[in-house]
Amino acid sequence: MMTTDMYDAQASSIKIEDIAASENNRVILERIRRNNAEDCNNDALYIVRNHDEVEDNTDYCPEGAKDMGWLGYFIGKHNHLKELHLRGFETVSGLSFAEVLEPFLMGVNRNKSLSTLKVNGLDLLDGMIFTKMGQFFKDNNSLVSFSMQECNFRAEGSRALSLALGSCKNSLTDVTLLGSNISDEGLVDIITSLSMHPNLRYLDLDGNRLRTNGCRALATLLQHSATELRDLDLRSNELDDDSIHSLVSGLKSCNHLQTIILLGNLSITKRGWQHLASVLKTPNSNLETLRIEKNNVDDVAVAEFARSLVNNYKLTTLNIQSNASITDEGWKAFSKLLCDTSSVNSTFLSNHTLNYLGDGLANEKLGSLLDLNGREDKKEVAIIKILQHHDGFDMMPFFEWEFKVLPLMINWLERASTIRRTLSLILVQGNSHPSTNLFELCQICT
Image (cartoon, rainbow, N blue to C red; front, side, top):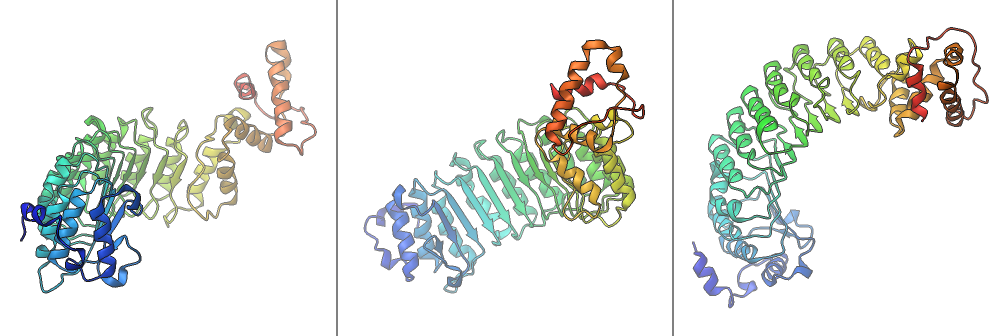
């Protein structure tokens, strides 16, 4: 295999036609070699499996160790390339995969411009690829996004990846490890290494084997690291009630997480869901989206989530669709949460924030309430709910309080008539509705 010095010595005289046979590959090699910002073709390069996958001159199909070595060398010298996508490609010219890949990685190690590295369906050679790229992860201060999808991944690979990610210069903002069947122990190492990245905002661990120890590591990441994670995807792992209990300790003291995805974790029972629901009661919670569809959520768990959202004004999306154990009783808990019609005051104090529970809800009333909650003006939402479910008010307290509250009530009625243009007049008569806290109710219009 050629050394870096050998590539340097030949770089000025080597002819592109002597490196690659494919015309498309030659175009790419020449473009990368020129190192001009204006012809970077969207700043991305894809290494693809075979020539049938080549769609344009951003797709490069390996021919052997020679062309891959020179491609890596030119990438290492390039100052403008932003994205490198390594897709699973086949061995060529009778060489082993390592013989083709190693000279390429030797050149890539010198690159300082790449901000995105994506590895998809690639043989990681028991983690050797990350060991061989150690210099790249350590020296490239531009790298913000790392993604690995459906790769062969064992214990050695987990350790090698954790060392590589831990050596990055605090630049990573998003990390995706999708469908790679990483063990719980391996994920502990990787999650721990990510605690050194204060800019990390997105972590996707979809399709691995995360369990209790990994969730403890995540709880520590959320509680004690400088990282301010915003989005956490844990779908299709091996989470159970103990895993959720371990994770909740971190969620309760975390005020920066906005989205968590837990769909497809069928070992979680009502005990685990009750633990999770308790997070929504904590003042620290800033969760806006919680996805728990395609699980074993039942009416008991649904009722617990509804109770937890009574005073929660942050969560807008709770996706619970495709949970076969939820019956009409469960959906009724959310109807009451969104619009408690027992009194005017209860309607006013209902949840006006939650606006999504999943697609295709059979409960028409619940769907209309969710649509109503989707309006930005929450004062308007409260007024409409009150007008829809309360035909009149007891006006006597307003006259008893004389002019302190009556002007506010008149303002309220004027605004209500604007919202409900079909109402020409609100008939105020009878004594059928309690007036507790009506002063507060009137304030929604001021």
